[in-house]
Image (tube, rainbow, N blue to C red; front, side, top):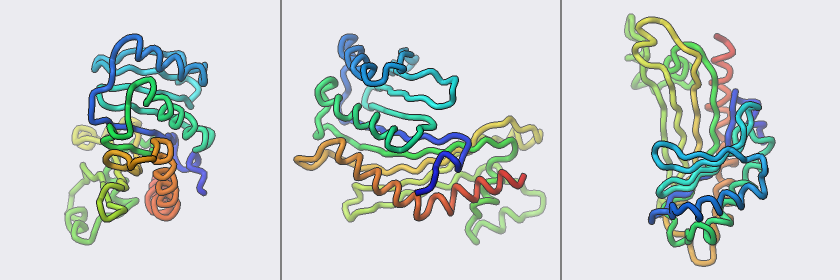
Length: 247
């Protein structure tokens, strides 16, 4: 398995559970859930509410690696930025999935989708879209546009989703997100922002009888790491890393 942390400036492993029904938002319920999480991870002591009404518990960010968990109106998210290992991140995610049926009244029947996502951030001061086009290449059908005299690429964010089963319930999505805009290109002034690559395995729909959230996450992780190591690392991450190093 590739050392994911060596492939980008920041690496993170996230879990997202989207529910069909609204999640509870009572003060006692939310605080009780986060207090239980805090017993396992005492360094998660920063609790706050976003303007959107989402609840967040996280560790201090100053050291560059930190855990976070959020509860939205119909989504529970768990993330670990720059984890020491995938196992460490998965232990956190599985704790959340173990607790939510009892503390947030979330049933496997209530699952709209469950995600296992690997994310990578590359810091780069320059035209993100041009760099991505150079590193990953455009299709032959688009080469003519890129080669037009005086042209500059100002939007190139490859994205693809593939179904991994006949019912299209198990899907893999690769998405590249850039943060350069036309203003930056016009003035040739580029802040040091991050190019992000997200690779997500998603299971849609209610879980089959007898299947738990934790078992489903294990299956998603297996697919995610297999496809990461077969395709994403060598065909997306390393080319981006090499293109940035060459600038």
